Length: 238
Ligand SMILES: Nc1nc2c(ncn2[C@@H]2O[C@H](COP(=O)(O)OP(=O)(O)OP(=O)(O)O)[C@@H](O)[C@H]2O)c(=O)[nH]1
Ligand SMILES: [Mg+2]
Image (cartoon, rainbow, N blue to C red):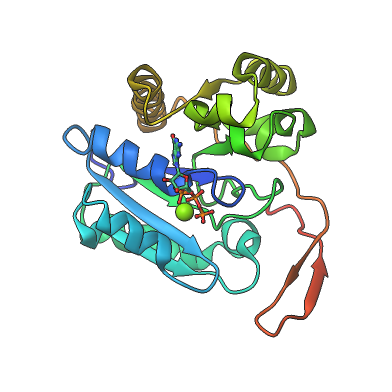
């Protein structure tokens, strides 16, 4: 790896429960022997994801750190990325040189994507349990993330989803950007994920990958700590 100590920062976003933490654990398990890795998690009120990943035992627990984001998970990965950037840079300093830092977004809806000021590339994770038509609904993450995952394909028979059709719908929304059908029970798919991460790591470290902003989010609402509804729009971060 080059001498500069900046890592490849890889964002992992997607709706609640689609398997973001599991995917990060999988990447760590597959690549910890080949690459120096770190993980930052973003949770709304807790450090649950960081604790889950530490418990998975796939990485030195010190290399997994949590950022608590408060009411809006989008803000922390898009509008005010400073706490995340500081967390990434602290990790890079403490474990230099790191090859890849994976940043997990707080689980939310279809609209959350990372600012290119925080990550060099991003994965958007859907799962078959969310319904076969989700890929057709589009949105910035589905349309323009560097990699779209259709996760938990092992569950497809139980939820009546046609995986090839869901992948084809996703591909149609993405103008040639890659789509990967993934299941932790399908070693071939795990290998394809590993290969994608390795290739992207190479591209980023050789300066041949240009970070892309998937685009702005639609106006949306959250409830805050007091149960109050907050509606807002996120501006472009550049
Ligand atoms: N059947 C099946 N279940 C999976 C797979 N990957 C993850 N899961 C399960 O899906 C559930 C949610 O996984 P997480 O990795 O916690 O999902 P997440 O997106 O990080 O969730 P939040 O951070 O809460 O948004 C867990 O019960 C996982 O065990 C898979 O390939 N197949
Ligand atoms: Mg998680």
